[in-house]
Length: 386
Ligand code: TRH
Image (tube, rainbow, N blue to C red; front, side, top):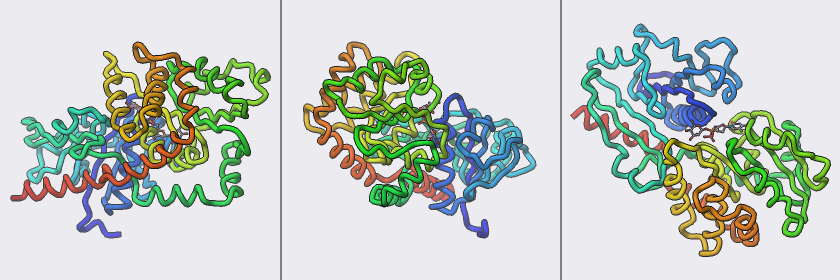
């Protein structure tokens, strides 16, 4: 495809810890390339962390095209090559490389410069989203783009046709699902509950496991798919023989698209961070969120805002139980005991399943993040040129 007329987008991503930053930037980069025919370059500062998600990358950092997106190492940014394009996105308030800032300062026709922030359902988002600040050093405005759930926010990443793909996957023959799971050393459980857990180290795993294996309330077999080092480490020392009804599976890190498919294959999802929350939402499965902990417990308000928004249409008792499980799982002050909250939620299993599915469809009707971002840049370009 010719580049003429196509928007040139540069996305910069510093990987602080975990996989969320690069997970979101990589997803956005692919979507802009595939759905909006943008010419996208993704600059990453931690090549080996990026390789976990983008397995096609070579070991030694080198400019590589994967799925229509050019990926390059931060250290390769120079003033000799265009590193700013038409749309310049800094992921999660990263500081741009000096060479990029130098290009920005020197260029007369400035790109639309966006700071992509973290997701939040909090009420302040609409007043901060799409605001700008003038940077005198590079003589241009920087726009703040906040992913969120409000009409005036950046929305949530959601690829076109994702729910159709999911529904087709769920309707496919069990033989295909079985073959897929076998690639990751997993089997398709015929009975009982399959629980996927991708959480942080400070989750109350002991209480969680006790509640899930409570024979009085859960006499059925339990299959645990443990993702990520923290959830896996939490069960390393458990005497597996003592739990004949529990199948423990530690999963390798799978490609992003397969991570979605794993979510679609499980019954209940315990997800963490920002990107997996969105993927759990789109799976339509019941899920519990382990939020990324921030200094000064800023994540508490963030969690509560999300829960208030998401559970709005839930019946009162389901809403209360769902929120209680989140408070206990995330260790909020005055949270109820985990086991009690979980039992109460599981007593409403059918309603929980139905509402999870419905909420997924409802949120999918919102304009998604890439769409909002493209509309925003078009609007800014028109204003900038007039
Ligand atoms: O890894 P995370 O905990 O990332 C976090 C959060 O995003 C947090 O908000 C941010 O501030 C912090 O990083 C710096 O969780 P998250 O966001 O779900 O990212 C995980 C990514 O990894 C997601 O894109 C899914 C992907 N993934 C795979 O592709 N394969 C896997 O096997 C697993 C377990 C995850």
